Structure formats: C-alpha cells, structure tokens
Length: 171
Image (cartoon, rainbow, N blue to C red; front, side, top):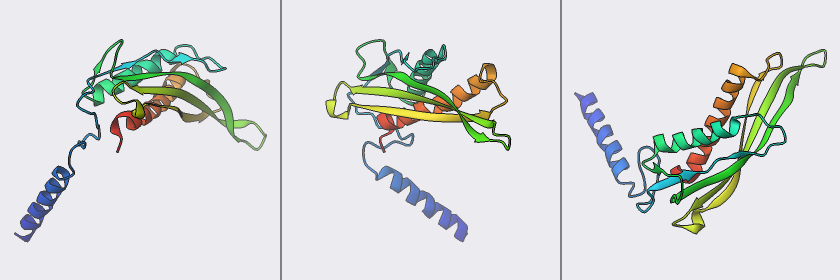
C-alpha cells in the first residue's frame, strides 16, 4: 500500500516537473522555433590533404538523415530555414601506440569537418565551427572495406550528433 502511494507521488512529481519547464522544451531535446519548417544540407566537399573517395557523400547523407529522423523539419534542396554548409577539412591517420620493437600496434584515423550553420530567420543564431572525432584500430588492419566503413560510421555518427546538438537540441 505504501509503495503504491510513493510510486504515485513519484509519478506525479515527475509529470509536474516535465510540464512545468515551460515552452521550448521537449522530451527529445529538440528545440525548434515555430517559424522554422525546413532545412537544407549542401554537399560537404572533401578538401582534406589526404582524400578518401566517397566520404563526402557519406557524411552529407548521414547529416541529412539524422536531422530528418530526429526532428520535424522538412528537407529541401534550396531556401531552407536552416542551412548546413561546409567541408571535410581533415582525414588523417597516425600511429598511436608502439610495440617493444618500435612499430605501431594501433593507428588512429581522425576526421575534421568545418560547418557553417545559417539560421535564415535569426542571423545571431548562425555560426561556423569545426567538429572532429577519431577511431582507433589495430595497425595490422588495412583501413579499407569493412574496417573503413566501421570507422566512418563511428566518426560520422559522433560528428553529426554534435552538429545536431549545437543546432537543434540547444539545451
């Protein structure tokens, strides 16, 4: 009996705390003004010194899909209320740890993306920022095929989530 009362009070407290936070808050964390309905993601060119073919397309599509799937915004090709532009500025592989024989036992691939975010309804909310993430892998592994796909998935997932958080989740 006492547990039912405590559980009901806890549920009521939780419900009141969520609804009393005011406007601009949602359970998904997305905070989009009412006048924002669309977004566009322009093609992110690969301008890194070391060019890995196809990663620019993969990144562009992942950013488009993330926003489409986690917000109520509609994707458009031009004249978006939110505009995502930029380029891949770095694709870098470096040895991370060495063995006793002074050879690399682990490598790290790092990708950096420069984003120019434009809020066409509020210029003060627009910004430019670099995002970067890495993936470590065994030095005996060639970074191609499935290994490259895994690295890109992990890196791009983190970078696109960071972009999403900075442009739409603004906690």
